[in-house]
Image (cartoon, rainbow, N blue to C red; front, side, top):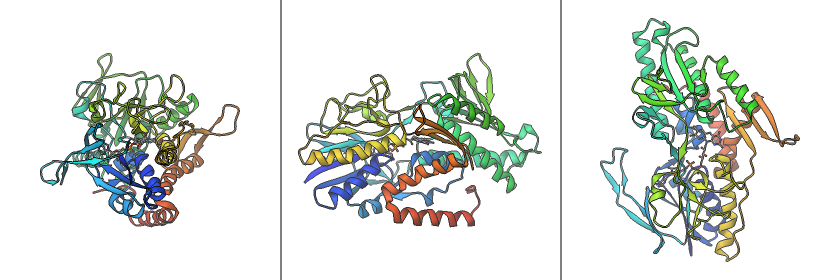
Length: 435
Ligand SMILES: Cc1cc2nc3c(=O)[nH]c(=O)nc-3n(C[C@H](O)[C@H](O)[C@H](O)COP(=O)(O)OP(=O)(O)OC[C@H]3O[C@@H](n4cnc5c(N)ncnc54)[C@H](O)[C@@H]3O)c2cc1C
């Protein structure tokens, strides 16, 4: 049987494995295997909510082992460390009991494939800024989001215990990068502050317990989105007393401050790096595969590697042309569209038919600004092809994006029951996870 191996069970990889498992795996037309270094999937665009404690991960995790059993594919828990293209084998490193890599659970293994799909996503790009990697927290994984949440709680508790509620006892938070991740996190932290004050875990006058500064190198926040979205977002953030500093380049990060071009230092008990991405370094080490300057695998219009037709790549780790000089952006909607395309393309491939060409359709972008607000520009029927949305309607549309992902991987029944269970859970638990 044709062996399809998908490495990376994120926004794109999990959807592809689920679709292929149900279509080909259950019918015995192909053997589909998903490899991921984690045991559970959480949709990456939720990570800023995990970091701010507004989302309990347990309610949103999908366990790969069970999910694969229900959807006709196999799951291998492990990290891809290499590739032998000659013999078509993926190298999987040993699996350890914990992040500390002390107790080995499974040894290194090889996995044979006929078709390989690389869906490894991306990591934070620190651009070599001194101190950034050591002192700033990134938001790429569930562990990092949980680490940030716990650190925020610890710092808030310490300041609260020491403080008299004066502005000097405020927790200073610097967020580097005014893209969607930075903006959404800044807004979400205001929500966290409100709840911590409610439970007397944080003191200070309204708006002063957390002093949040958002730093952006470009001349506006959300530089990839239309100017109207940027301007509205900035106004909303400033109304939330979030200090927005554009045209500001960070030159170094220290344990308690951030230095910007010109030499000024901005106090920071916690620094979060949300500026720029690159694909995992392992991709640049795979012999014979061409990658670009940020390790993304260069693919053709059919999402096949430029140098190996048996290897496909999708999502953040793929460098795929959108127009002549613009690449498909690293977004969940792109990973979703590529998963849909590859489901059809790989079915055609195992039947010996042509795989076709992928076309990316930009359906617009929405940015969540805490509850109950979002803002964005979405595909519509205006003369420019996009219309501007704001407020509660935008928030509903934003929430629908995650439901759409759940529907694609878990189906209608599980999604509906999941929403109901989650809604009930919220009635019983505090709005912010406090432990
Ligand atoms: C806080 C935040 C908010 C965001 N908000 C939005 C948004 O609102 N809208 C939007 O469109 N996009 C958003 N994004 C971007 C979006 O999350 C990504 O574009 C999308 O998740 C990319 O999907 P992917 O399948 O390529 O990779 P991912 O979803 O990142 O999945 C990659 C998978 O590969 C696994 N993996 C990595 N390396 C290995 C290895 N060596 N071996 C085995 N497994 C491996 C990982 O464990 C992971 O499961 C946001 C991102 C962040 C961080």
